[in-house]
Image (cartoon, rainbow, N blue to C red; front, side, top):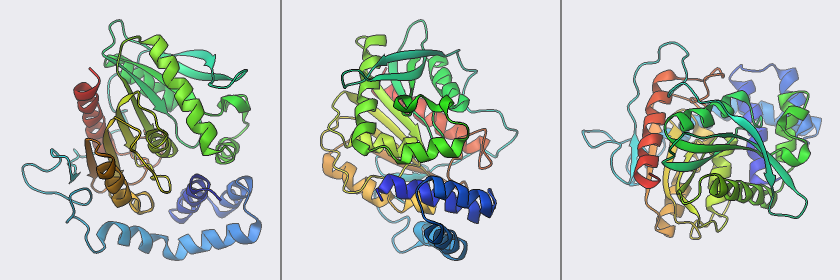
Amino acid sequence: MTSFHRYLAEEVAVDHAEGLIPRREALHRLTLLGLAAPAAGALLAAWNTGGENATTSATTGPGAGTGTGTGIATGPDAGTGPGAAMASAAPSGGVSPAGPSPLPTEEIIFSGTESGVTLRGAWAAPAQPRGAVLVIHENRGLTDHIRSIAGRLAADGYCALAVDLLSREGGTASFEEPAQATAALGAISPERLASDMKAALGELERGAPGKRLGVTGFCFGGAMTWLLLASDEPRLSAAVPFYGPLPDDADLSGSRAAVLAIYAERDGRVNATRDEARTALERAGLEHEIVTFPGVDHAFFNDTGPRYDAGAATGAYRRLLDWFGRHLA
């Protein structure tokens, strides 16, 4: 089981432990991911009994808040330096998405890096782009929510391409249920995922010639953002992974991107890789900032999901725009 496959399976277990999906649905999803019934049952039991403790220890254990690249920072300079910060978030109110009203997106088809491969994505562009951003979807594939993020970035001045990493399987829309799309993503090798993301960067270059390139991704897409940074990709100038786990043994030395890594305080499973991410960024000599939003959980930016937090999402989107403004515009 690869680290990404394990991440997808654990995400199902966490959703079950937090009461977001019933046991029958959790077992169904884990079976689609290739887990035998005994293994699936054991995983659910482990998170039901120990997941909460594991989450707590990941955010409050020894050293939390004391290092230069992770934890909680307080005081007037919190969240402004190259180290970590616990970002402030306005109280949530309503369910309005963060950012502006999105510009419309259009479906495009473009070539992969391999002969005969075609890929799909949602493209949005302003009249006068400041830069270009690749948007990488969550574990359900290219959804309307992810398309809207591309549209919001376009409304704020960036050409944006939301790539469908299930293109070779016929596209996200070809699956009857989201769990099938998740299982299909779990079966794709990291090498193929990196290849398709690099092809999408090439399409961004063609659509926004001469503009600097950035990338952002959410959940699974956050992990894919880290994977792209670890895939000897020098074209990126900026990256903003949202609560994505770092790949095993990630080497970021082939990247030149300035990285804003966004985490959620209650997301102990992903936060367990936060110190490793800081170490990898420092080892590669990349400009970076690590920001943790307090009191929120994994997927707090997704306004269509149960963990959405409007205040944190708005704060995170502002930080993303500031980061891209500094490194892409």
